[in-house]
Image 1 (cartoon, helix red, strand yellow):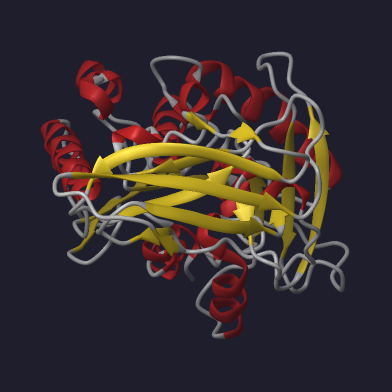
Image 2: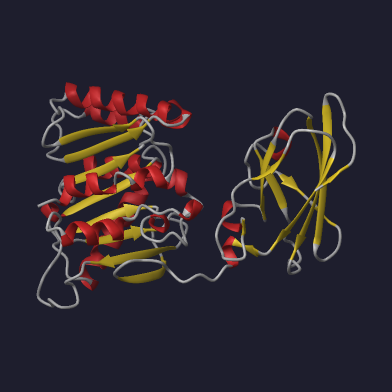
Length: 367
């Protein structure tokens, strides 16, 4: 970083980003950060100009007294810069001050890194799983319990989870932090506190928001899981196929679609774990209105959690309490069928959700 000059109210930051390998024609390097000039964390907002095959450049003007945090992408979070060991870097920071030339070298990109999975236990990966109801193919990862290979006549309960890339493997998860479902299952089974279960992690796609939104493509996504994926899992694996042994879980929009799927299909699911759920995201009260319109609540076990450790979680806590209140109006109060959990320090991220994985696993599948 080379200091050039100082201005009283604003300063210019000149980005000079070098890549280790030339990018193909049509690709571009972007800077994204917390300031409007960098798109307010839109990964495809501020494009750099190609200087030569390896160098990309661009300038912004920001207040001189502001630290600027930023990341480097090729236009999406899937194409974010990663470090030489394949891990995602912390935010880069240009400290407050005068004009700066900010120079960085990108060693690798997230979508082009080659990392060994870090999953505990036995699992299978199904790539390019298609649906007649949705646009995108997706990966599905199936985690198998410890006795699966040694007890060939045994059948197992099944947990379906959304955002499958976040469930087991830190090398595919945001910030290298997964939900640690594999570790917790192994530990709780070893303690004889948890049933041995199969866990099906369904990767999200670029249509994540609308697929997980019950007011948009949520019904189509549900049809994919219920009519296409579940029959495939039941054919390929030794599952208990009945509703008494089938549950669903997710966080954020994944929590909303988990609730919707269990509430509308209690013949398939006995319960759901819904963490930091967007029950009223952007004033969309579809899920809460769905509960209000239900004359008699279905027979379900529901784990509803939210943190309060950042602004988004505080907002979603209001959604949680609103859902709690409408459930109470229908006769569902906290107890054996409904567990309300909060965490004053819990932020909206995988690290916070991982701290509660054992709680909801035991609520749904505990012995």
